Length: 192
Image 1 (tube, rainbow, N blue to C red):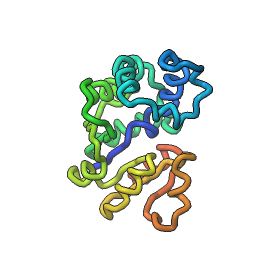
Image 2 (image 1 turned 90 degrees about the horizontal axis):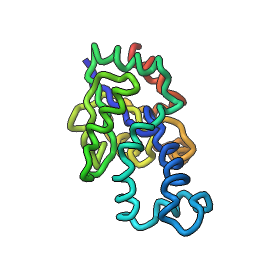
Image 3 (image 1 turned 60 degrees about the vertical axis):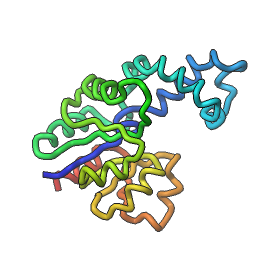
Image 4 (image 1 turned 180 degrees about the vertical axis):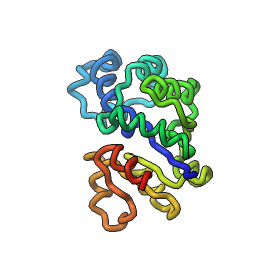
């Protein structure tokens, strides 16, 4: 029995697309100008408390309307459920300890897309959590987390290719990261 882990945002959930939709739509009321005129990095650099208060008010809407990532097919969702019959499944997401039910909201979202297995863990440090759980295989998209998790030689690490992590993909220092374009590619590896 293996311990298999998945990041949620960018692997299963279309998180960045939902954030862009939120920022370019609903959040524009906290700016003087149109949100579409702002650079995405500038939007994220606004006063953190202001954005955090807005995010807390929008959390339920944000997650209940979250689309499934286009890198995850319905077949992949079925495969994750099937794998849970033989393996321990973890959904590990980076999150601070904000005062809203992070785990419950993400668990509810996973159930809404048809994933009925696994434990949801929200942590500020994925790498330490993965080590503590003895995760054997993990799928990640965040460059910072990929680099941190890659330090653990016991984890078979899959990196989802996105433009924001192309820089690490070019580095020869990370030959152990298995680069994938969709979730199905690593799910097939588990059966081998």
